[in-house]
Length: 67
Image 1: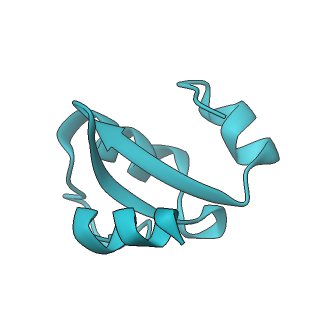
Image 2: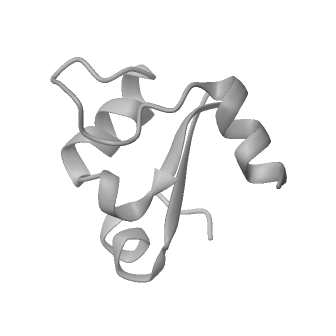
């Protein structure tokens, strides 16, 4: 599922992958994310406010999605 509607994403997803400008910036279990951290990742590509979300870097995130 690809969506900017985070309510829907959090309702149905087991895992989240966050893309910014076509690049994977983070991925992990949905439990590791909240709306604020996900919006921050989408808009800036980084987490400035602390450790919400997995913080997985793009290299390991892309290999995680391939397997």
